[in-house]
Length: 337
Image (cartoon, rainbow, N blue to C red; front, side, top):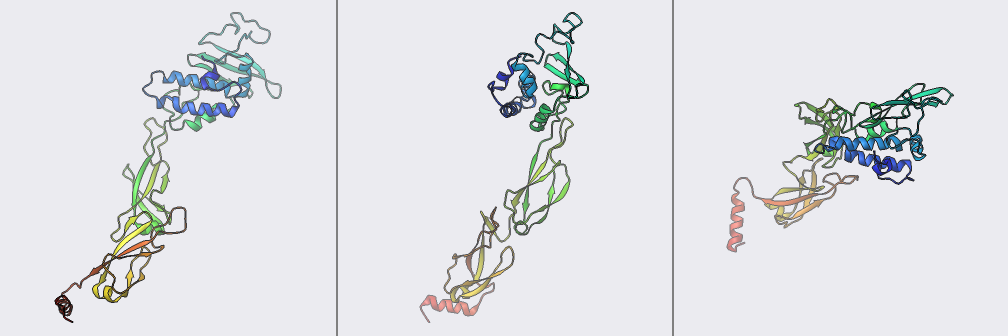
């Protein structure tokens, strides 16, 4: 096995945090589940695990730096138990596939036996009697960063300690849910249809913006290898509205205005997402003129303010023919009074 410092790509004077960061980065890159087409993926990941098994534990790292153990964690020049020799019954000549052990003193002076085995994947550290176990450092790191790869594909590249590989978690999914604009402002329940056919109701907070994500834990894709399912993320989308068009946080609407009101001016009622408001139309307002109602649009993300409502006047004629209006328009067209 290569020098563990070379495997992790760190200097010999690197601190433990730097070693841990290097391992995290390489573990994500080299994990077999992320390199299914590489026939040497297991071997590379096993080498990485072995390197961190040594450098990730300060005591073992110190032993390696002093030359007491080699790059696979095997003791150098070990002469057996106590004064016992390294003959056929001792541990003077480790070979791959052998098992060995070592006595050390515990915190209360008790003798603790640690067992080691050496196979194709490098050193494995077995259990310890009377305490002094693995310390959990490696397991904590590998569990943290490889939760998405995991259990069910056999050993994770020679996981030290012979622990089970971490479960391959199911994939996360995103579900875009059209939410009525009124519900976006006020908040409230919306129905979500999951890929498995289930329908659930989730509560959308008030004043959410398009793209807001809600997490449904465990409602994503199932794991193909017996692990936990992934999560479903409900993504808020603005549903089409029969009256308003969305432009960022602004809304647009067309307002029919009778010809007489456009000519003479008037106050007209304008619908908003909350309730209708009055808009003063000045005399001689042309069709197509746009008025801005500030704060009557959609919520601005991260702010207590709203966008605006842009109201475009559309001059409208009566639904039924009006003889007096026709006569007036004819006189105007013919140049009469």
